Image (tube, rainbow, N blue to C red; front, side, top):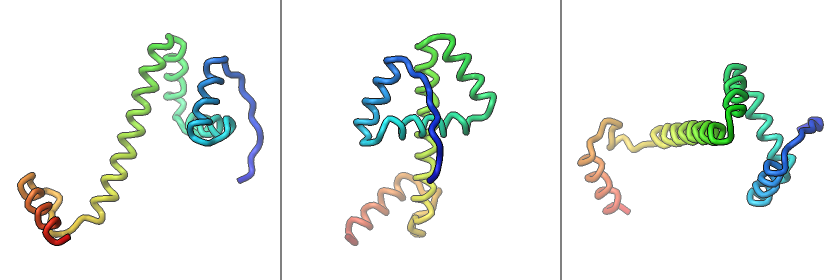
Length: 113
């Protein structure tokens, strides 16, 4: 992938967090910054405006908003994993199966295995 360098100023706390994140993820700080930029530029303008207003209102508000955004991302990942899993479901267990049906099915699978 070709690209170009984009520089940014980060306060010491953010720079330290990026360095630690990069170490833990076995990535470079530049890779962490590029991922953050890719996310930011994908946000709709209204969301970017909202983030700037929230960030300006203080650390606590920004932390809460970041947590909520993270939760939304994890929820999306879960929905995709669930949908992928349901695509391969066994026809003996219909999507509207009750908990009792699921338990019976689990016993059947255990006996087959």
